[in-house]
Image 1 (cartoon, rainbow, N blue to C red):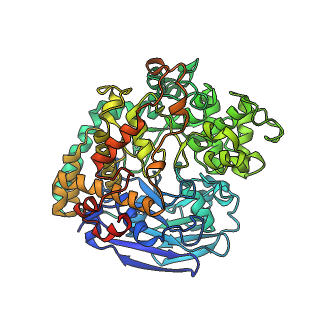
Image 2: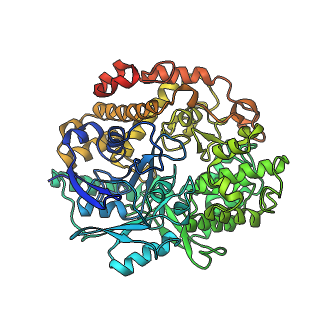
Image 3: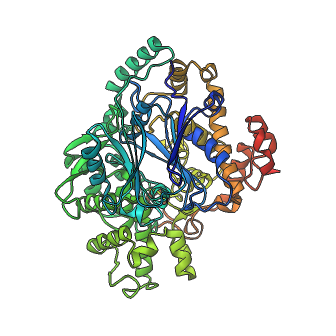
Length: 609
Ligand code: SF4
């Protein structure tokens, strides 16, 4: 036995057909699972230049090799496709139970292709796959959809679904499972473009058995004992990611008012401790004792009177400081409204902050905003705007396109205020205050992601965050490590106390694949995945010009940035050269033929010749 299912389910919505296929063992050896496997299938199966909203795009759902076992923090799952927001390869992680149910159903990967002729959902149980009418679910929020599918098919049914934003093709719509969302890059829009409201699985829970079950059980036991006492787990379990708000502001990392400033008054109101005080219940993913989430009461909006799991640090930034707000109840209510419609809080916050800055500068007025006074901190106005984005009405239609396209449509100098990389809106990390992090986001193959390669030494303060030299090699290394963790799905918040030697032991005991015993080989897998993702983008026409930061980072000194006061990014070209050299890419940011051969990717060398 092995923890790998070895099988994928291919669903064609156009022909209402399905088939199972074996996943070659060589793919696991070269890409592990999850993100690595997804990159392989997307590269091989998507023709370059396809419209991400066409039936030719494919939506991939993947679980990790260690998911649904007793190991803690390995049971998240990932959605991948060509992104309608960035035009690049995209991967978006989430929790909820859906991924585990995929594993119980016997699949490491589900590929959804084609387009249904009317609103539909797919239901999978032990009898097979059914294509069912979803017209009665149309327009419903993700929580109601999941409840109704449980009522209809049984309480063991777990589903992944979209809200109204996905149906209305908001470019940053999410896919929801339980209380968690695959938030980034518009994976919910791809699902909506396929007329697919939900995919539901109802199968019995089953034991996932490891190759060396005795050894694996021992490793699980050791991890649980270690985690019980681990200080990072305890901190994440109590405060969760909101712990970062105050310390990040002290370092100038927390963006304020659309990245104009790095400091906001009343910050203690939105500190980790302040959110801890109003946490009502613990929350988190299947098979994770870190449980970094927390249920909190919603007061306003369609989820008013209920509770949501949130907010995370990223939402506190995007719907709080970025909009000039330090009201924690407002942030919870705004988070709940984004969840109700089903779109990404980061992208929504950045688009809203962009509109607020244009309003402040008089570039747009109430005649452009359907009468909404978009002053910084105007909470009622921001909730009204979120509703408009969800329904894609008026100004909400434009902002639902994402900040890059919104700026292009308004024109003039507005691109200066559009804070994105490759079309993906920035998370809560100020590139002028953490230069290595800026480089990591700029070179990320999915756009501005804070989870593509976290510069641990810079964030820990052991490397000067303001230095603009000597960071290329450490950033490519951080990206390799993230690619490995994403491919065995070690949650970045739930992997306390683990290192790559430990991952290697887990993988070997779980699968029996000898290559996984060698950490150097794992690093090569990480590098191979990044290279393959880059080649996907090269094939789409991306190059050095796209590995950049928002213009503001180069031209405007950061105001009120604490230790990063008055910082701009000056030596970016040099940083980029260092990164490309360390990665084995040309000056244009394209992997060399030699690099591809070294990584066993000789079959794709023609695209870089
Ligand atoms: S640490 Fe948090 S996000 Fe990670 S698996 Fe656990 S509950 Fe989920």
